[in-house]
Length: 316
Image (tube, rainbow, N blue to C red; front, side):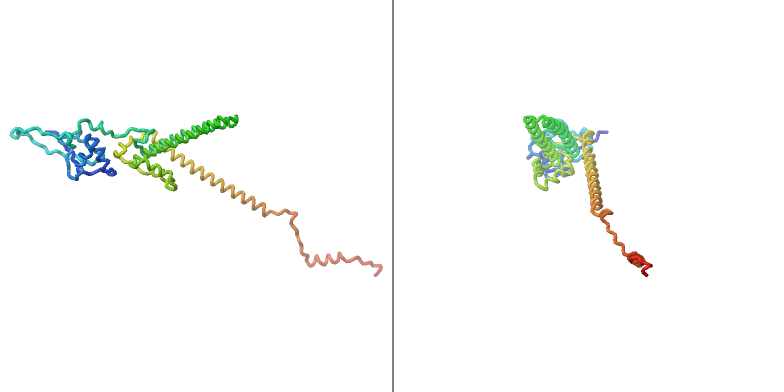
């Protein structure tokens, strides 16, 4: 019994989220052909890209095509029973050298990498959401460490009244700010590339109100799962990337707890000050109290008797 054979058919359908121009560029690069020659494959009619493939070869070839962004499919070849009576002499088929239907001349898996190389210090390439958070965390930790060292050096220079040292420290601090800004721009541009947007959109961070929430979009929006015009998708996230990105959750939690503790402490201090002020304004000493006692009838008579002079019995 002969092995089942397969063919790869394409009818112009693209994978979700893939731009047709991007798919054409990727397919032209795969076949090492011009874009104009590849455009004939997107007519909407089923086209057979490859025939007579084993199941393993067909899956490999299909995966390479899917990496370009097109939605090709496998179809089984009809089983043909050979017979000597069917043998005929006919000329060999001539394949047009520039035809996009011609099979690739090299291993397609080597020509179209599954994942792109990471380039931290470049505006080219793509990074996902977790890697964007991880690289931002590393950049923040390094910056905090360097700023701490500069602060200690500045305190030492201030104590020695070294003017030249303070100027040098100011220049170093300015250079550090520039380096931090450049590194932030690079990783933000690569995150924009992963979404499929132009890196020039980073300038929206400088627009009032828009720049306050635009960085959140870089964290929320998912990237393209297939190759786009900026290259293949980034490699899977490593354990270090997941750990570093999760540190942001810990940092945010600490900031929330610290803000709540500070707010509660401020409210408590305000309440205690209010009680102390009200107590001081409402307290009266006993020396300031004047008591006026109204006389009773009995007490009035007794007082009158005491006020009368004594009567001399001899005069009476």
